[in-house]
Image 1 (cartoon, rainbow, N blue to C red):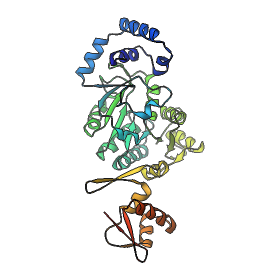
Image 2: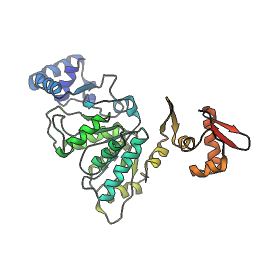
Image 3: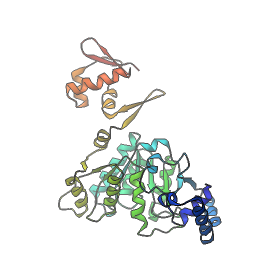
Image 4: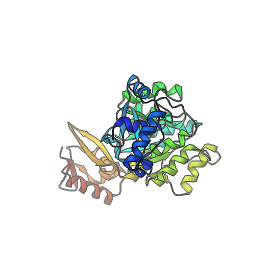
Length: 335
């Protein structure tokens, strides 16, 4: 199927699930009818004018994780770049009316995750979303913003500069909606399935009782993603949703390290020209080792591990030929 046909069907509101139900003849009729109702040439002109890349569900660039959700979008409009590394992505979402505590926490989480090579996904909304993106940008890391409107304009408008910084840092601004689609209220719950679908986990920082962030958390559970929540003050309205999530079984987190440990993510550590894929536990020990022997007691203490845990991790590093044991339970880096 041609890319133009998929753009047309997407403009007509036909999704992947509906597409699978049609026979070839029915699909041809749908495309013909959509051609009559939608102005494809105007859409293509806007795509070219705004330097937008269109990625369809049949393209190799289409994110693998997103393909696996119940209702993946047929088409993604992209400004910026989609990389394979997006498989290691974590969403940070929350209240638009965020407190100082919430914005500071979201920015710190975004910074810490991006610093460790993890892509931060959010919705570019005011409050928590903006703070998460800003944190990732400050770390010069990758972050992806999913919009609830077309890419002709940025919403909210005050985040236009932030969207440009996201792209400049190697991230992307993405929408499933045709270029000129306005930011209508019903678009935002729909876009939330993409935020969770692109991610291994969703971290909710602040959320009121009926917050859209809770919709994203629901999508995450449906998509077999992990849900994490930052605890808040019991008398704060924007903490009601996060505290409720924790009561219902969401993982309580206080830092990026909590997220990394729960997910068992790999941390990228550069060693000369080589990049080593290490678990968080392995990286915690390896970063403090050198070519000078270090005694096991000191290694365990600096990593805040028990002796048995430190030995377990050191054994893994030895099997990877990154660490060598010396006499007297001393350890050194091999590279």
